[in-house]
Amino acid sequence: MNLPIRVLVVDDSAFTRKVVSDMLGSDPDITVVDIARDGKAAVEKARALQPDVITMDVEMPVMDGLAALRAIMSERPVPVVMLSALTQEGAATTIRALELGAVDFVAKPSHSMTVGLGEVRDQLVAKVKLAARAKVHVPRLARPGVDGTAGGGPRPSSGVPGEAASRGERGHLGQGARQGAGPGEECDTVVVIGASTGGPSALNQVLPALPADLSAGVLIVQHMPPGFTKSLAARLAETSAIAVKEAESGDKLTDGVAFVAPGGYHMLLTADGEVALSTDPPRNGVRPSVDATMESAARVYGDRLVGVVLTGMGRDGAAGMAAIKAAGGRTIAEHESSCVIYGMPKAVVDQGLADLVVPLQEVAGAIVQMVNQIP
Image (cartoon, rainbow, N blue to C red; front, side, top):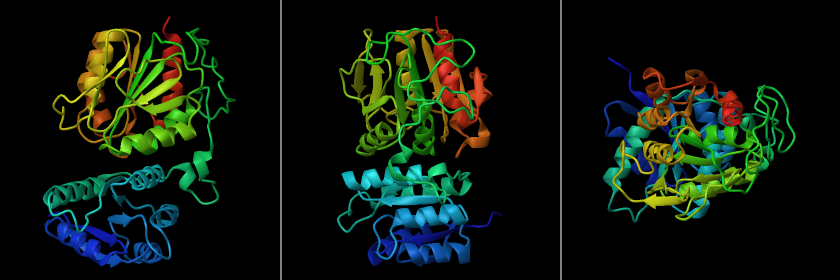
C-alpha cells in the first residue's frame, strides 16, 4: 500500500486554507501535514516537515509566494502547485512562478466560487497527485546569486551546447545557415513546439536560445487556460531574441516570430499560412491541442516542418508527430532526464516517432540544426 502524499498548504487567507485543506483531505491518497500563513513560515515548515508537495499562494505578508518559492527551490526543491488569482496580474505572477520551478497551478478558490468548486477540487487533487510524481528541475534563474529580473535578457544561441552566442548568431552547426526569407518575412518553414506540465519553464529555456534570424516561423502550444497564455507569450517576448505574441486569427506566419496558442482555442493554419483559431471540441481532453496544430501544419507545410514535444502528461502530440513524419518533416522529443513529467515525449519515443531525443538544454540547438538542413 502506497503512503499518502504529504501536503503543506500555504495561504494567508483562513478561508482558502480551510477550503484547500478540505479539498485535499477528501482524497484518501492525500494528507495535509500542516498549514502556513506566509512565505517565511512556508520555508521553515518545508525545511522541518519535508512535505511531498506544497500548495502556495502568491500574495502573502512577511514573504510573498515568489520569494518563498525561490528559497525553497534553492534549499530543498519540492514540487509546488501555485494557487493563482484569475486576474491579469495573477496570471503574470503565475507564469513567473512556473518559470522559477513551480510544477503547476490551479485557480484559487474564492468566496464567490459557489459554482465550480467541485471542478476546482478535482483539478487540485489531480495536480497535487501529478506533482508528487514530478521531477523538480531548478532553473538557473531560481538559484541563489543569479539575477532573476527579466529572465536575464535575451540569450540567443548558436545551438551548440555550452557555446555562447551573440544576438542573431547562427550557422555554427556544421551545415551552415540556411538562407531563408529573413526575420519578419513570410516563411516557408515552420517549427511547432508542444508542451504541458513543466512547459512554461522549459519554453523559457528553449525560446531565448533561438537566434533572432531563425529562418522559420514558430508555433507554440502550451496546455493552459484562457488568460494565462497571454501572460506566457508576454514573458517569453521579454526573454527571447525572436518576437513572441499570443496568436490571433489572421496572423501571418513569418520568420523569427513565435505565436502562442491562446487558451481555449485550437491553433490551426490556413492553406496560405495564416493562423485560424478554432473552438472545435477538445482533443486528448485539451484545447489548445498539440495534435491539432501539428496535423494542420503538416497539411500546409509538409516536409518543411519541425515538430518538437517537450515535458508534459498524457499523449497529446503523438498523433501530430506521426502526421509530421508522414509528411516528411523532422521531429524532436525531450529526453526523459530533463522532463518534469515524462508523458508526452514518452508517447512519441515509444512509437518511434522522434528523429532526435535530446535533453532540454540541447533542444534549441537541435531546432536550429534541423531548420538549417531544410533546403
